[in-house]
Every structure is written in C-alpha cells, then in structure tokens.
Image (cartoon, rainbow, N blue to C red):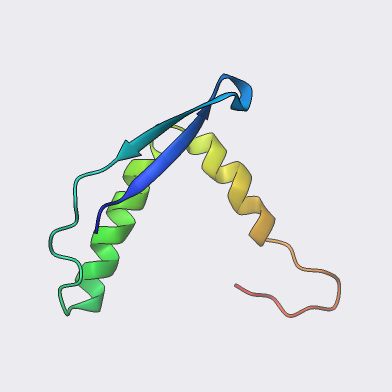
Amino acid sequence: MIPFVHYRLNEGLEYEARFLPALETVPSGDPEADTRAINEAIEQMIAPHPLRYWWAIKRFKHRPPGEAKVY
C-alpha cells in the first residue's frame, strides 16, 4: 500500500502531490497492526496542514434534526 495525499496551493490554482513510504506490512493478517500503520500514515498526511483536516471533519459531527447520532 502506498499512501498518497494532495494539498491545494495558491488558493486552489495548484496542487502538490506527496507519496509517503509504502506500507510494506499491510495487509499483515493482524487487523490491529494494519489499523495502526494506516492511522500513522494518515497522521503524517495531516501534519503539514492540520487546520484543513479539522475544517473538513466538522462536516461529520452534525446530523439533521431527528436523525440518529453516528458517533
């Protein structure tokens, strides 16, 4: 598995693409180890621009009135 991320630059007129090191051990047959490895890769993707991540995640925190909570 090769983690990939892109970042918007210059107000969306350009993008930067980054490939993180391959996750050579995924899949390993151990779901917990695989989850840890993937989460670490996601953390590396978020680290350069954490505010962008927090802006996006807010979309999933609210549900329409009367709908069951997801979390």
